[in-house]
Amino acid sequence: DFASLSQQMNATILYEADVDTGEFVPVLPDPEDLVVLVGRSLLFKDIVKMRFYFNISATGVVTATPENSGLLVWTAEEYAALDSYTVENAGQQIRGLTHSVNGYYADTKGIPAKNMVDTLYVRAYVILPDGSYEYSEVTEFSPVMYAQLILQKEDAADTMKELVIALMNYGAAAQVYFNYKTDTLMNAWLTEEQRDYAWSNDMISALPKDTSKYLYEGDDRIVWRGSSVTFVGAVNQNFYFQIPEELTENAQKIELLYWTQSDYEALPQLTVENARKVSYSLEEGRAVIEGTAAKDLGKAFYFAVHIVYEDSEVFSEIYIDSAHDYARRVLSGGTTSDAMKDLAKALVYYSCKAKSQLGG
Image 1 (cartoon, helix red, strand yellow):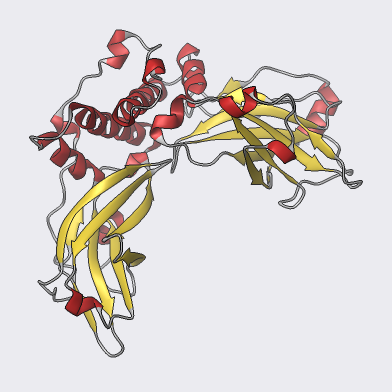
Image 2: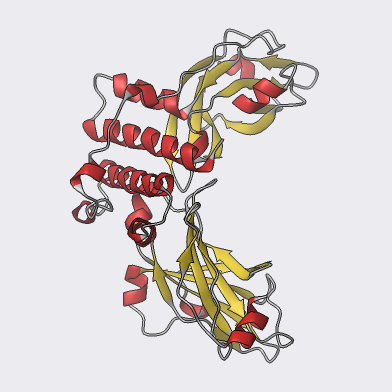
């Protein structure tokens, strides 16, 4: 492990990024320090978040657990207002360092697209047997810093460089749309050529058409009214329906049944038993499928409303939609703002680059 290796070599090396994945792998720490940052990375697979790797070198003294360790996080504004950084004044506390073959790591929460411009300050801690706290040094990091490091590496894979450029352009488009720190756009440091990426409507994945595997007869009183996308740490997709009160007043449960495109291809039939399920909120008039990874935004969801009564049930027709098709509708809308159209383009472009790099 890194503790024994560092004791043998008595050395600290620079951070290194894997040239294929862009992930910063752990490096050897100074064995004299108890909790040491040994690597930093940005995760793209399911949700954009930062990961920090640590070494705890006091083997036999303390083992990090969810109860006695964690990651402390401060925004730049919080950090500037303080002169010490402890558990007591942390902006966020993420409990529990996760053990792996290479030491320990902890992830930040998902980062909304517009907030990828923000720098976070973090440090890890462990609680020693005597109740005292041992901290790592405070380190600063951001998706922008990660992208800059990747683009500086001559041997980084071209697909990885294209992905971080797309991520910066997507984040900047979100900043403009949400009017967030537009004086410091996260793609401002890119070249003009990198900011002015080649857009084509052909990047939008076409929706599949077949729904023959759906077994239920749909009640035409339940009507799908549309969908939207929420730009949080991952992309959430919202599905809105018109459901008359006569169908809801005695309902015991109202839910959205859904299947991914991969589910549809693999299953012989679509049934309640093999459906994924989320609650449908009558108050909000929608159901939310959370956390679609960037690489999967071009893939379709098959979905239907399911209403359960004491001794019967009702289904809607089955519908098909995707984040890409939502973007297509945004781009074809005559009254849609330019900022929203730019965001839709950037989202699709980023998802295509994520698929190229991450597969799926």
